[in-house]
Length: 246
Length: 246
Image (cartoon, rainbow over all chains, first blue to last red; front, side, top):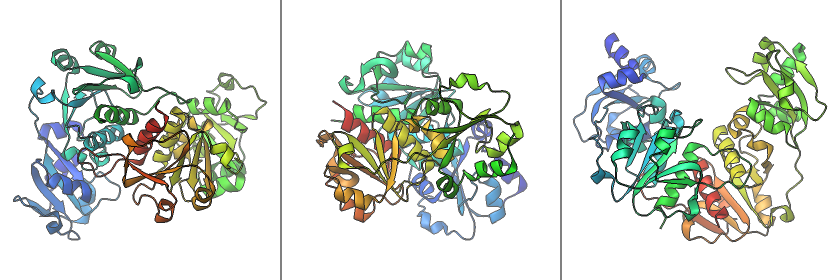
């Protein structure tokens, strides 16, 4: 059973303001839930209907299990057809990124990505290519937005997504900064070396000029045909492929 | 002004059955419309409100222009917030694909792609990489579905999308057939040569076994991290990048 105030709190987590205020977010979908359960994320509660047996989650931690009605599940879910279980998790506080954590590897930097599906897909791509850190400008869509969590398909349980002022970070970090830009070096001829940051810009407006100034090397995916642009998640995948290929 | 039966016909084009019956489909969005206007597609009519001047379309052909009310536009549109113009186009009948049209280049083959957004994104990717032909199994989502047309962002005006029985086609074509499969050769070590077909499978179930049998070379995108799978549009982009890179 959920009280009215509990339902209101859980419903409020569909909005960034309340997620940040409470430091909590929700995960739906069996596959995603299973991946978060086996991760370093702290689970606050598992809400499930009587159609669901929490045993299938193979919980090793002592977790607050709460059987709720289908009606309550529908109230707190962000899905049109909710599954039988929703998990409440604590938003992790990643330590401030320093040079030491970023050197020797590649990280992605996102300047103002707005579409939840794009961010989710980028996180899944980063997870596929073994990229541990994604650094987002403060105006990038919130990673704990239910649509982003949904599109991640569990990859968020492995990839750390940080929010910061990019100007501050890019100005300090002593690593090569590659930027996906027009009129740059052909991506297929670029020597990416062994570590660095790869900056991707906003869907419509691209990268802000002040961020472009901090890029050491502009890199371009050459166009052969007629399409005006490539979706930012597609472009990110092509960069991840090039930086990780042997 | 539109008659009730005209409205019903245009509304019916949201369903594949009626699109195929009438041989017609609708395009919305200024950018997409501009690209179709400048293509080989045959335009049947331009429906616009008085807020829109057809002059901006720079029509060279003699086209049936029809000013309609905002209410009628909302009735025939598949968008929540329709723009001021919708174009009615004839579904092209591409000639049956033969070896001659496919040799010397790469084409994509889609086995049962179901998500309209994925098909639209794949068409945009093909357009970026200069791939002229996409061959779909008959059960692939219909390319003239409004959501697919929307996701294509005009690229459908340049890329030919064919529907056919893949078994028939793949059995006849004398070109290398590469398949995106698990446990295949590493995509980064694969010599794709100068022409061939690249087969991508369904989002959830992958490629049907009978299609797999017709593949000459299984090719795999190696996974470095923890994600269970890559979205099919992302995988298609990585294949397109590898087959077209110099």
